[in-house]
Length: 118
Image (cartoon, rainbow, N blue to C red; front, side, top):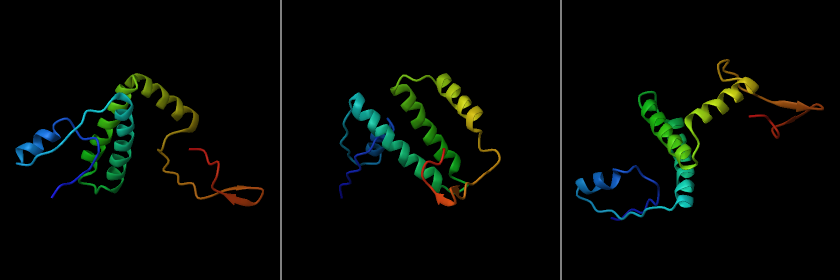
């Protein structure tokens, strides 16, 4: 049976597949396709972290962090710059410490879900 995942994988995955007695076909992506594949991987890993049980959450968050680090490197953004922007956003909008869930927003007596700040 042949599977065609067409997704970005970690560097040692082809080696691990071969050690398992299987074969695989790979390609090396150019910068544009790599960046797009990283964005897709970001969504994949975020979904896995969101669905993880408590036991698996840490490893899923580690995978998500690896993808974020790769995205930063790919776009030549330093981790320090990310921390600065993160700090600015926290100062402007706060963090998540108060565990607030927004239930509705009203304008002129009508509830709306559009234009809700993130």
